[in-house]
Length: 179
Image (tube, rainbow, N blue to C red):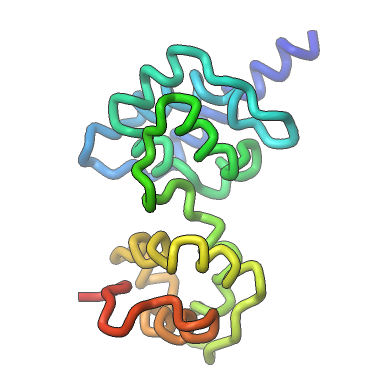
């Protein structure tokens, strides 16, 4: 009975994530694709449990877009139930779908760095978790997340200050959050 209830809660949560996720219209991402990714791969990504090897349908579905749609679905709702740290393990288990240096599930960068990037407030030095996450990929993930919606909620001009405060992560002249 407990397993049945867990499956029902997982499906309900997946529907919530898919409904609230902002899938990008290119590369074939759709609500249906994202839903299938989560349904098939949920047992491998659950929080507070060991990593379970993915079922064949999970890997088959993820190979269609090299995990792009699943990575794009990472949001606060996703993080409540699934462990973002298991995404690279899932990639490896399905045949190393993520290209070295790519990112997947960068929402943690923003969660830990939000106080430093707030609009209409002075720059506040980042907390250690912010810099720790940003150093993993030299801010690539956070810079890549900058879009018009990002600029409505966060101060893009503070990205350079954030880089400096975390140890000059951006190379001089590099592109991060603006045209």
